[in-house]
Length: 482
Image (cartoon, rainbow, N blue to C red; front, top):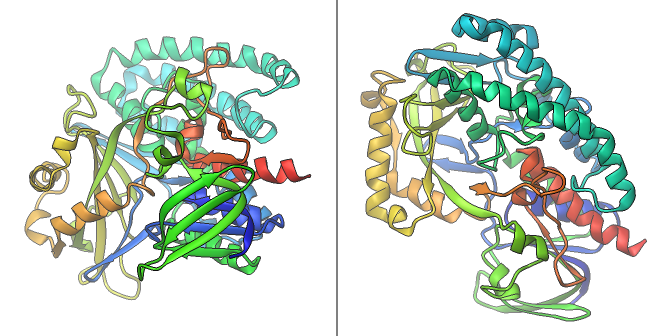
C-alpha cells in the first residue's frame, strides 16, 4: 500500500478542511471518513440540513472565506446574499430579529426593551469593538492562545481591550438580571452560536455575538456544499477519500500503520508519516487510552461534553409558517426556566420551493433540542417521548402546524441524531486558560506525528472554529516539513 504524508481520520467538517488544505499544499493525503456522511439528509420528499448552527465566516474579510480562497473553492452565488434577519429569537412575549445592520439591530431592541435602550446600545458598540480586536488577533495568531514569548508580548498589547470588555460585560450582566426575557435573549444567542456553554464572559464571545453583523450565510445545500467541495479539492490534488471505512487497528512510531475495514469486509493496510484525528472520533481512546491525557492542557482543562443535539425532521406545507420567519430561530418557551431544562428549540427552515405558488410549496423544518450526555435519556423509548413533547412545545410558536405535518419519522430522526455524532457539534464545557482567558486548546498531542482537529479545540470561534481548526491542524504538518 502507498505511504502517505498525512492520514486524516474524521467525519466532521474540520477533518475535511484539514485533508483538502494539506493536499492543496502538496502533501499526499488520505481522508478516512468512517461514516461517510455529509451535512445533508434526504427523507421522503424533503431535504434537511443537519447542523442547527448558522454558518458564519464567509463574508468579505472573514476567516472562513479566506480559507476557501486559499483552497481556490468559489462560493455559490447564493452565498453572496446574507439573509436579513440573520436569525430570530422568539420568547412568549418578544420576537427579536437580528439584522446585519447595527442601527436596525439597536432599533429592534429599543422597540422590544425600551427601558434598556441606552445600555443595550452601548453594549453593542462595545461588542463590535471587541469582535474586531478578536478577529484581528485570530488572523495574526491562528492558534488563538499565545505560543511564544513574542506572542505573549502581542497579547499584552490587546489586554486593555480584553479588560475593558470583561468589565463592561459584568456591568451588562447586571442589566440582564433585571429582566428575565432580556437575559434569555443573550443566553439563546450563546446557544445558537457557540459550542462552549460557559463563555458569555469570554472576550471571544463578542466575535460570536457579532455574527449577524459579520454576515450569516445560507446555502440551500447547507454544509453539504462544503463537504462536497473539500472532497473534490482533495481528489483533484491526487488525495484519496475513503468513506465507510472503519479503523480496526493503529500502531505508531516514526510512521503510523493503519488497518482498515472496507464496507465489503475486506481488510486494508495503509501507512503515513503523520496523522490528524478529529476530536469527535470515537477512535481517540484506542490511541491515547481511556484515562491517559492527550496533552497536558487536557488534564488542566478537559473539554467535557454536556449536551448532544437531538433533531426531529419535519416536512410541512410552506403556508403553515409565518411569512416573516427567519431561516434560523431559537425558541425559548419559558423565560423563567433554565435554557437546557427542556426550554430551547432551535429551528432551521428551508426556503419554500422555487417555481411553485406558496399554497402548494413544501418546506423542511429541523427542530433541534440539546439533551444531557446521559445514556438513559438517549434510549429509543426516551427519544420517542422527547420527539412527541417537542411537537407539543412547538404548538405555542406555530399554531395549527401539528395537524399539517406531511412528514415525520421519529425512528429515522433518532438514527440520524445517534449516527451523526462524529459530525454534529455537541455543547462543550471548556474552561478558559488561566493566563489569557481564551478557551482554545492545542492541536498537538504527546506524539510528535499525531495531531488533533475539531470544534472543541477552538470553541472561542463559534462556527468559524471548524474551518480554522481544520486549517490549523494541517498547517502544523506543512510547517514541520518546511
